[in-house]
Image 1 (tube, rainbow, N blue to C red):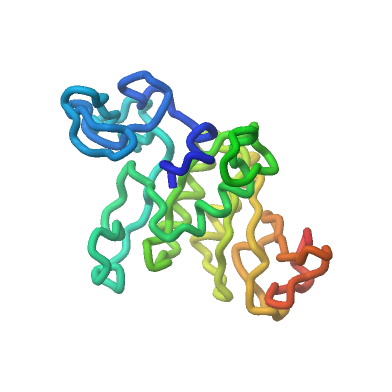
Image 2 (spheres, helix red, strand yellow):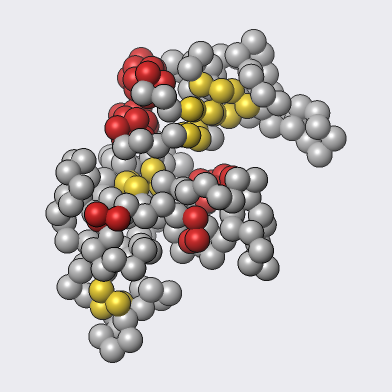
Length: 231
């Protein structure tokens, strides 16, 4: 959620795509003035947006100010949820599922602002790569595309708090490429409480992390096994 007050200070801003040059993300047309809090048209007190459908930095993703929405799902349960963004990749990676927002907050929530929580790495910057729809749907192509984006755009650490018991060769190839480019990748070990193979955490290039309790013990629901690295 790029509107979350605990995350706004730590969003990465891609300067060439920040058309109004104010160091923040305004996901609307450069010809429109909107209120940055309500996102409503405000011709008097509003500010111009960052979107002009032009690829200012030449990376193949026009208007990617804070990242990209790779979600490209066919008609599914999201179609029943009015307003759900599930069908077309675009530069507006708003989290409609909330899971990514929670993970981002644990990592990089701003500190000393009397709001929410404090992240464990509050000095890092967050690049938003959305691969799941509002109902939690995704596919190998979307995930692999996001990994390639990370590798090609100098993202240093990639968090993947999701997974499947099915090994995807498409995702595996993307991970191997990202690893060759020096990207540090971590992923959840899984939440089924077994030692079954789980991916992408099961790939050797990925740091597999189990869930733990406040007593620093493995949570009962957390997957485990030989591929786990941290817990």
